[in-house]
Length: 455
Image (cartoon, rainbow, N blue to C red):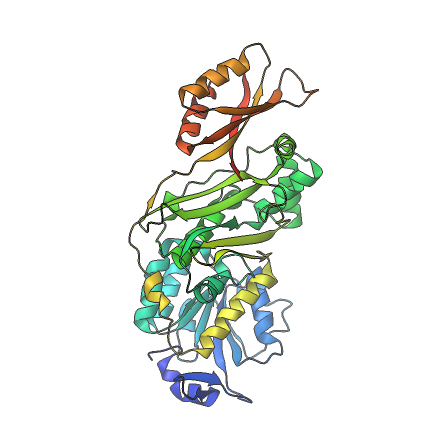
C-alpha cells in the first residue's frame, strides 16, 4: 500500500487488524480492542449524529478521538455522551497527527473545507466527506490526490443522504454502460412541491412552513434555485457516466415562479410537478450530454410522481440493465450519518483506494447541449381581452412551435386570468426564445412560465 491509515501507525494497525488470507487486504480482527481512530470536523446536525454512532456501542473498530469545531466550549454543552477521552479543538492542524487515521469533514462549503481536505490527503489521512459542493467543483483533483497518496476519499453522503447510490452505481452497476441518470435530488423542494400539490397552498405559504419545520434553511437559495441538486447531479455524472460535468455549465431553473394553480392544470392533464435533475449522453457519445435541473411535469403514477415529502429518488438507465431506481430519505442528520459511517467503515476495511478513482478523476471537458425534443406546458396570467390567444399563437408559430391544447379553468378574475397552452414536442431553445418575446406583451399580469412535460 500505500496508506489507508497513517504510516506511522503501522504497529497499531497490525494490532487492530488481522490479515485477510488470500486477498492481500486487512480484515477486522474479532475481539480487537485497539481500533481505527477517527477525527470529526464539524459538530452540527450531521456531525452530532456521526459522533453518536461513533460513541455508542457497536461491532466496529472505530474510535472517536478528536472533534474540531468553532466555539468548542459552547458545542461541548449537553454532550456528556461523548467520551472524556475525545480531544476538542478549534485547530484543524491538531488532526494531522499520527494518532488520527481517518478525518471526517462535515462543515460544507468550498473553503476552508477544500484546503483542509487537501492537507489531510497530503498527510496520508483517508477522508470521508458529505460536501457535495466541494466534490462537484473539485472532485477530480481530490480523487487524483487520494489516488497518488494511496488513501481513501469517501463521499457517499454527498448525494441523496442515506441512499447508498454511489456505491450501488460503482459496484452494483459496474458491468453496465449508463446513458442517463435522473431523479429528485433535493428534499426541500420535493417537500414544498408535494405540499403545494396536496393542500393547494401558495408558494410563499409553503416556504414559510418548510422553514418553520426545519426542511428549508433561513436562506433557501441553493435549494430553490437548483444549485444543491446541480452539485449532486455533477457528482453522479462523474461516477456513473464518467464525465466531468462543471456545475456552471448545467442550467438551473427556480421553483419560485410556481403557483398552486399550476398543479390544478397539471392534474387536468394527468400530471404533477417535481424538481427533476437529469443528465444524458447525446447519441451515446462521451463528449456531449444534455443536462438540467428544473421543475417539470411528470405523469401521475410514475416513479417521480410517487416521491413524497423530503424523499429522494435516483434512476439510472443502462445500455444492458435498463432502468434501476434508488429511493429513500435524502436528508436529515441520522440518514446522512449512516452514509458517512458506511464510508468510514469501508475505508477502515481496505488498504488502498479502488481502481475507479483513477477513472473518476478524469477532468476532460464535456459539452452541454439541449437537443432533446420535449412537450411543454406554458402558463400565462393575463388581463383578459379579445385576441390574446391569437397573438400568442402567432408568436409561437414564428418559432416553429405547434400548439397541442389550450386549457382555462372557469370562474377566475378577468383582471388576472390564468390559462395554459401545451406545445407538441420541441426544442428548449425555441421555447425559451418565444417566451422571452411574449413576456413583454402588455396583457401579461405575471411573467409567463414554461415547464417541460416528461412523459
